[in-house]
Amino acid sequence: MPKIGVVIRTLNESELIGRCLDSLARQQPGFDLDVLVVDSGSTDATIEIARSGGARIHEIAPDDFDYSTALNVGIERVEGDLVLILSAHAIPTDEHWIARMIAPFADPEVAGVACRQVPWEGAPWREVARLEREFGPARRVYAGKGSRPLFSNAASCIRRTVWQQEPFTLPAAEDLEWARRVVGGGWSVVYEAGASVYHSHDETPREQARRLLDINRAADPGAPRRRALREAAAYLRRDATAIARLDAPVRRKVAYLGDVLAMVAYYVADFSRRGTTAERRREDVRAA
Image (cartoon, rainbow, N blue to C red):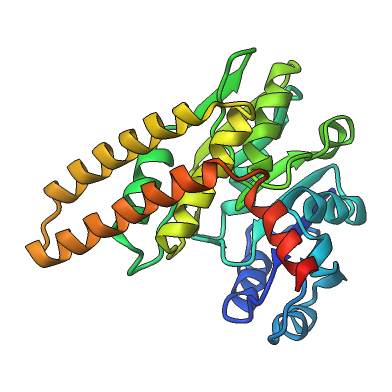
């Protein structure tokens, strides 16, 4: 069986890196995996746990980190024409995740595969709603110029020969930009809903705003400030409607609405700042 590369990005992931590696070892019918953890400055037991789980380790300095750099460095160092990409806190939901992720590559035109993401138990309402909205139960194939693929490197698989021509480039939201680029170049990208991982975030309103900003800047880097106002209004309208429909006490709904108001305010404020979240984080590390 051909070797498959696995690149796992980590930063203080001691709580879940062991479970992530165990889930890969249990995959059926059994695979020859070359697992590399790319760590960007963990100060907990992440590296020790990863080593004990059989993974190789490559460390990069925190001030050198961005998402594309970490991935490109990792992909260069693993074997296999197919490379699985995971965040350490993205855990396959069953033992057939790899089999389902690699199956679409039987089509030589497929450049990448992304999978469904389901929330961890107790995930915030907004994260549950986002995952249900974005990562639905229907399989999709994206091909042709103008396609806007759903693609996430929280849990994906790519074809090395395509990556060699089209490596990741953006500091953040690199997955969406890469998928749009390769589809525009004549390949296809698959959203394989039959494969899934547990993956969700408990983000502050500021973190939510930054993630949305990175995604939207990847789609349109030169968007004018007035677009931020339109987008913020749309997010407020959508989330306020969702909150009104929740089966929750009024006090909790009011708190949820306050978080949404804070998020859209941060979104508008951050829109005027240059760079992506990863670029600003790198600058903050260097300044410290």
